[in-house]
Image 1 (tube, rainbow, N blue to C red):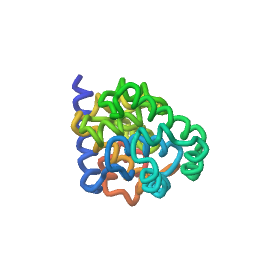
Image 2: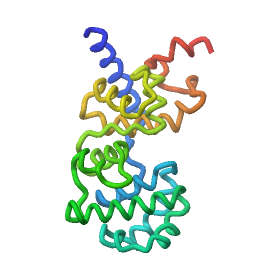
Image 3: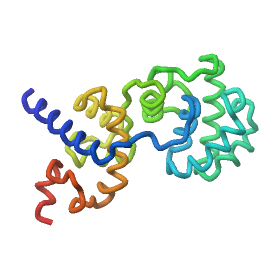
Image 4: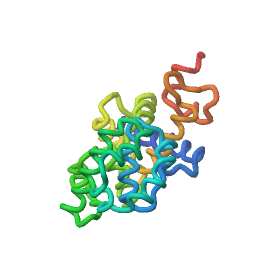
Amino acid sequence: MAHLTMKKKKAVLLLTALGELYPDARCALYFRNPFELLIATILSAQCTDVRVNQVSPALFARYPDPQAFAEADLAELEAAIRSTGFFRNKAKNILGCAKALLDRHDGQVPRTMTELTALPGVGRKTANVVLGNSFDTPGMVVDTHVKRLANRFDWTRSVDPVKIEQDLCRLLPAEKWTSASHILILHGRALCKAPIPLCSQCPVFDLCPRVGVTRSR
C-alpha cells in the first residue's frame, strides 16, 4: 500500500510538471458539439488530427447532424473522407453510428461509456474522448503516445489499451484523467518520441523513472 501511495505521488508530480510545459493542452480535433467530436474521433483512427481537421469543416457543412449523415449516399461519404484513410470502413461506421443515434437516442450523443461503445465504430478510446471533452466526464484516452509514455514512466507494464486505461485510472486522480491524456499526447509528439525519446532535451528528465536508464547516455 505504501509503495502504491508513493507511486501515485510521483506520478502526479511528474504529470503536474508536464502540465506546466503544456498549459494549453486540449483536444486537437475541430468540433463545435458532441456529435461533431464523435464523428471527428471516428475519423482520427489511423489518421493525424491535422488531416481530420482539414476534412471535417467541409464534412460538417455538408452533413450537419445525425439525420444528414444517416441519409448520406455511401459513395459520396467515402469520397468526402477518403484522405483520412480506411475510408470505406469509416464511412460504414459513421452511417451506422448516425442511424443508431437516431433510433436509440433521439439523435443525441449519449453520455455513458456503455451507450457510447454500443454505437458502431465507437470503442473506449473514442468514448473517452467524447466523455472528457464534451461532457466533462473524466475519460482516460489511451492512444499510441499515451501507451508509450505510460510504459516508459512505469505507470503500467501492459500493452493492452484497456488494461493501460485501468492502470492509469488507478494511479491518477479522476479529475486529471482528461487533461493527462492531452498532456501525454503533446509530450509524446514533442520529446518522448518513438522509438527514441529526446531525454537530453526534456525539462522534466529528473522526474522521469527513465532517469536511471538514460543518465549514462
